[in-house]
Image 1: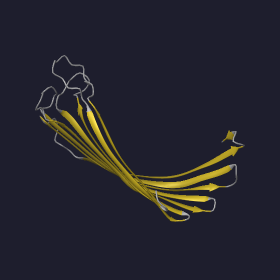
Image 2 (image 1 turned 180 degrees about the vertical axis):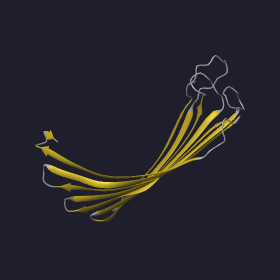
Image 3 (image 1 turned 180 degrees about the horizontal axis):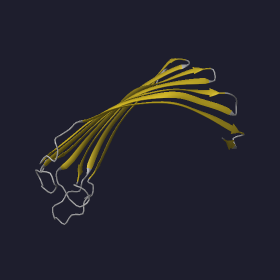
Image 4 (image 1 turned 135 degrees about the vertical axis):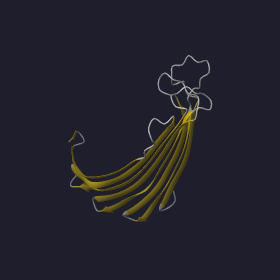
Length: 202
């Protein structure tokens, strides 16, 4: 941090050899491990004495192995998941009242593939599943300090989501039909907190 600016950056890496997820009598089996990489960054700007703006970004990628259920080992059933979040948190202070405005965007992509190159243990010779989801989240709420013992929080939020899914297989058990969904949700909320002598909280 320096004067009116603070920032943070982090990177994480995790991997495991895993365990065999399926009960298998086959002497050749895999241990269904995974690896994950993640990156996070954010910056805080004290634009004025009572205004703070803090944008952020998070990204993660996971790659791993799967089996065909509990009793069928599969050597080349893999998945990849990518997740990205970006947004900004704004805080405005007016006397004893703090106003918070948050926006967050989330994008998630998942890919499942079983290509039967190493083994042909599942029902399908080839299968591929795609999932893609997006969400916009807006949240506006305020904290009011009524007196030493009583505080009020009230706000409203809006979520707008969409997903796209597609699954195909060989042999084709059904024609590949895309499944697209759009959802919106609005909410209002309030909470009153009463504290008495640091002993009773209601």
